[in-house]
Image 1: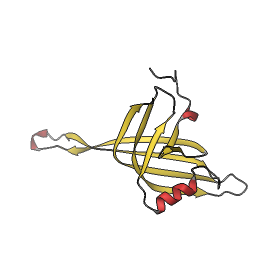
Image 2: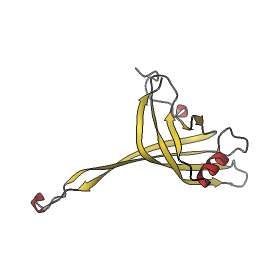
Image 3: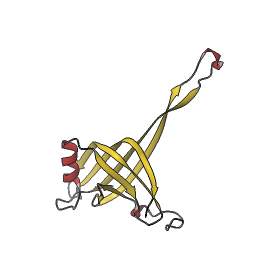
Image 4: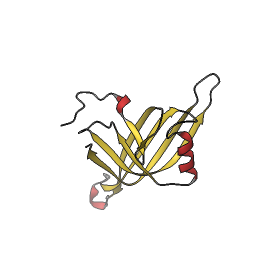
Length: 137
């Protein structure tokens, strides 16, 4: 039975890279999709028929830039530059709740420096292989 009762507070959800939380995130999200493959034939009566196809997933986050972050923009930059496959976990870190994990590559990394504003960044990661779902122990 999950420890979190009711509607989850989004503040709890974090993205980890190799077991280290990305520092100073202000928002993050996870997206899954399932493509289909065409199975239409002359016998389909003019209607499109589909069968299951590939699944895919991605994770994204936005945060505040800090030069001294324990794991932040500069670490993500280094991983992007090296084309590193990262082990990602998306979780609220609450025992008995659900977490998602898998390998991913950084597909985009943006930094925004507005006048008299906090510097922000955003990162998008595209999964490679299966996104696993497990109960947090």
